[in-house]
Image 1 (cartoon, rainbow, N blue to C red):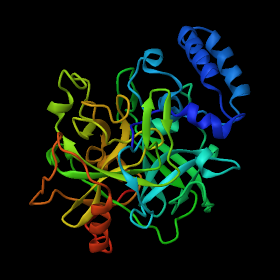
Image 2 (cartoon, rainbow, N blue to C red):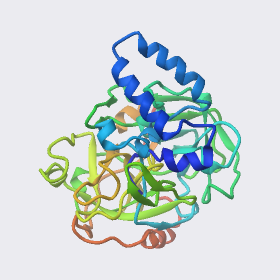
Image 3 (tube, helix red, strand yellow):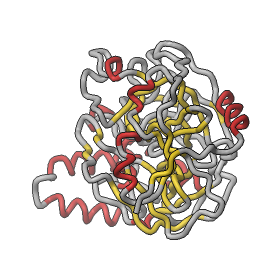
Image 4 (cartoon, helix red, strand yellow):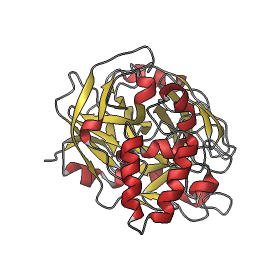
Length: 369
């Protein structure tokens, strides 16, 4: 996967006529920057309402329509690079968020999310905003469960009742903070398979092998071009310490406590465009557990620039204000099999572990309203 980055140019080939092209997007973005503090911003918003036939989401911006020199911010598109194809049967708690309307899921997918109970999903806050920084409406997107192939499958699309963004979410010019959101569905998911959430910061799990899962880009060519995946993919990466991630040759002190870092010093494996909102998981004491939410990063799978994931354990109390969830406590013995400098295998190891586990083992249940 590759981090939250925009794949606008790749999407144009499939969605011509429904999205802004790269040149128009760049022009409008520069116009917005110049007019942000003026009445002209209202005019620009009106222009966008005419040109944008569908909501232009934050992930579209970060997937490469604008290069780093134009945007001047850390890429916020989600991604999976260097992994291998997998099946929703191995990760039944992963869902795709798609724009409402007709057409294949490939042209409408924009973010991922996870099922945390039969009616609630966990995703990234930045997925809830369009290109111009306005919140999207709940009716502008749907959720599809049980998808392995975005092109060939046409599952039932679930209606969204509402969503809730963390009150301290900040889309800073350098880094997203508290990049987490909850989605409430209009109806329960029949036979929902949920994921347990880690109930403390994953900072204490440095070196632990984890897995990223998503429908995002499988190859990062440049900030303006990625190769999109049509199938669900997974990859294994180790959790990296904040000290390493904030080193002068990496993020130079800009990564705060709301994020954890994961990946390899040499790059090559990462989340990317289209992976945003999806999970970073690990098997703790035999329980598949979500540690992070795909958030952002500098490019995708670049050397020294690890993927940035919202640290789920710091937000379980906030989540409990809305709904009931399953949580996993810190295991007594933590197996640390990875390092920031080693290479990664495919997702096959996690598939085997999943089969061995068979079913989720219930941990402590926390009630929320």
